[in-house]
Length: 90
Image 1: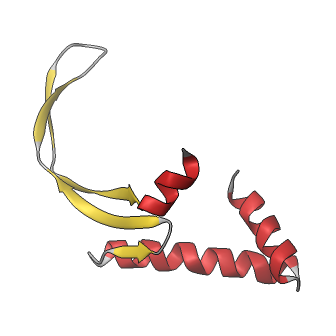
Image 2: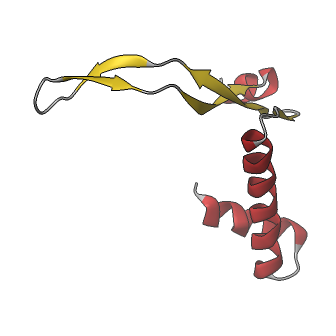
């Protein structure tokens, strides 16, 4: 399922227009992204927790040339699934 599929499900459940459903989905996604940008943790009951973690600087290798390169430290998004989601998927 992709974003369009989620919009369709929201539209089926809530009714209204498809544009309203798309705005609702976009708002949820934007809230999660904005919170992660600010360094906040986002926890959605029954789904899981989104957080931004720091990845340390490290050395890597260019696969084409084999040359050693330095990879900068960066923040990356992480997701931890909730127990309810893990149990539902089993």
